[in-house]
Image (cartoon, rainbow, N blue to C red; front, side, top):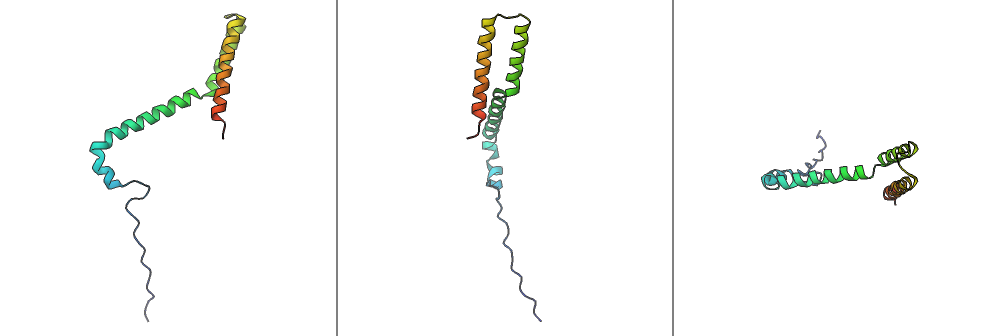
Length: 100
């Protein structure tokens, strides 16, 4: 009795995930440094954005401002101006983070 033929599976393509490993290895001496610089620049931009959009830091600055005002380290006008600037910035951060 003959055994039924099994279907052969095709081998998976060498490049899965959108990059060609062989090409990456061959171009590494030429493109390695620019790719590294690009990666570092992206990480720096991400960190700066994270710090600039940190609501907790801004709320801490508001609390610090209120404490300085209550300890009479600043007058009413200075307090109002700084509070307005911080609240405007907080509002802007919330608009940027707002989905849609």
